[in-house]
Each structure stands twice: as structure tokens, then as C-alpha cells.
Image (cartoon, rainbow, N blue to C red; front, side):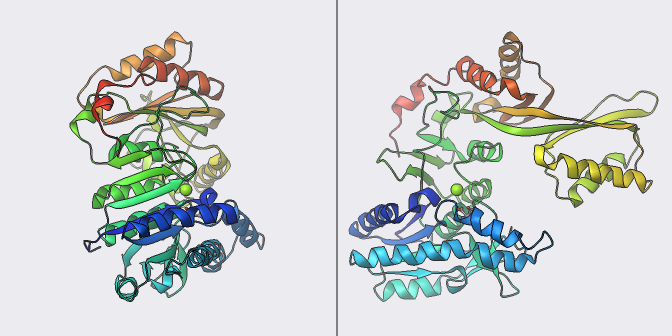
Length: 423
Ligand code: ASP
Ligand code: MG
């Protein structure tokens, strides 16, 4: 994707921020403030809160073997309504605004309906209208047009991706994501009341947190922001607090070892007991799971005894049945031989994330000691350069998150944060 340079502000409003007419009006007022600053504005809107779920449910009510193109045509419509309504609200405030659906811009995507990737965004139409006096383009987020000329959607939470893609394409460094929380926190404040809002967070950290279950930004949108170096401001629609800036890491960030604790509640663990320990076995297991779109996360293979071993993996709890079915099918087909399948649907994943981990050792030891001191047994461990995740029994979720938050000192403001100006 090519990038222009411009003074355009990109504002995105999530479902709750446009949840009813009163909130839509408040969103319009925020947009008008940008116009008053002399900026052209691209507003990306979500469907009103709950609307996409309602549409998806209706589309699915005709059976599971639905036509994904029609599913997209249905679920994309929620955003169209909000775009039109917001344009009307703005016009009512004498702001020259119009709505745009994805195909009108156009937002070109691939044809993977339900999870399409943005290929490019045409800039000519919007640029021409801006030169004609349009101040605000209200764009329906979450949607585009595929190379089959059909409406596509970008996957749930995809309007974040739309916002970042427009900011990247129009070369805007003002990408404001308005949501119902006032930023990114060190942990979920509903679990840790002393969790702090972060003024800044690095792309890599945000990407891990988003992928690990923090709902504030869609993970793919963070990936795109990182790729195109788009600074993303996460802000609350309901307050004027300074929010969190998602940006490139700077030195001050590295002074803190851990930036946040993420958790994902509904995980499950599946163990395939006694498979042959030879080349191709793991490939056939995970190949079969991939075919069924199982989101496999952690994987462990035990030391083998007499040529046989156990393989354990984790996946979302709602995918256990499909996963086991896939494995039994390849056993029945003679592709894989195992003794038994065991599962545990009562696990959750707790992760500590921080770019400081790259340069500091001992984080894993501190984490495991803290959990051990509370008598919490660790079932599976996985790590990346900036993250350590563990699976533990779900009944320890709150305790584990609270303990780690305290042990890593996340409720204290690090000195480096004092020196930083909020974005
Ligand atoms: N409305 C879509 C969803 O609920 C896209 C979005 O809001 O980001 O997933
Ligand atoms: Mg969202």
C-alpha cells in the first residue's frame, strides 16, 4: 500500500460510542472539533453496539452451510446504517459530511469472505471530494469489496483495521480510536482494581496483549499499525482523558520489564496419548486441526519412551469437540494411531508481556515463584521474546492475575512514566 502525506485526522468510533442517537451526536461533536481545528476528517464507524451479533445470528439462522458472500452482505450492513446516521448528524451541525460504503471508496480486499485482507484503498474519490469542500468522509468500517466485486468483511473487530488502514494510506499521524475504555491498562481493571492506564505502549507489546485477549484493539490492526508506523491513540468516547498511545518503542519504555498482564478465560487443553515418535506425526495432527480452523495455541511434546510420546495442545474451549472429532477421523482413516484423547476444559491462560524482557533475565523465575507461592500449579508454559504464558486451572484466574500484577510492581508508577508527556 502506497502512503500519501496529509493533515487528515482519522477518527474511529466503536459500537458503544455510536450505540444510540445521543452517543452518535456526541461522536459528531468530537468530529466537529477536529473540523474546527482546520482538519479534514475521515471517520470510521462500527455498527451500533450489538448490531453485528444480531445480523450474524440472523444470517446463520438459515443453516451453517451458508454462502459467505451473502453472510458478508448482511453483516456489513450494520456499519452502513451508522455511517449514514453520523453523516446526517454532522450535516445537522452544518458540517459538510457524507457517508461512504467500502465499495464506494473503494476499499479493495481479497475475496476471503468473513476474514478479508485489505489490498489497497483508492484515494482519488475521497481526495476529489475533499477538494470540492467535503470536510468529513464517514466511512463504514469493517467492510470492503472483493476482487469478485462482492461485499467483504474484515473479521470481527475489523473496523479498527479499517481505521489504521485509512491512516496508513492517507499518511495521517492522527489516528484516534474512540472506545468505551480510556486506554490500555496494565491488567483488566475488573480483576485488578489497582491496574493503571499506560500512557504509551509499544506496538509489539500491544500486539501480544491483543492476541492474548485484551479486547481494546483488534490484533490485526496493531500489526498493520506496526508495519506502516501509524501511531494509534486509544481514547475514551466518554471522557477527555489522555488515553494510550500505541507507538514505536522508545528507551523509556525499556526501563520497565513488564508492561501488562493479559488473560484469556476460556481455554482448553487436549492431550493425545501415545502417538508414534517419528517424522510426519505432528504434521498430520496439526494439519488436520488446521483444516478445521482450530486455533491451536500452545503445544508440548513429551520425551518419548519406546518410540511413543504424548502431545498436548491448547485451543479455545468451544473448539475442543471439533478438534477431537478431527483427530478421531484421521485415526479412523489410518493416518494417526493413538491410545486415548484427554481434555481439560477448565483452564485459562495468564501471560506477562513486556519488551523489557528482551534485556532482563529472570522474569520467568519471578513469575513461576509468584504462582508457586500461591499454590497455583502451572500446566503448560510457552514463551516468546517479550511474553511468557502459562495455562493454569480457571479457578485461579483472578488470583494469578492479581498476584503477578503486584509481584511485578505494575500498580506503581515507574519513574520513566513520570517523565513522559501523555500523548
Ligand atoms: N461491527 C464489527 C464487529 O462487531 C466490526 C467492529 O465493530 O469493529 O465485529
Ligand atoms: Mg472493537
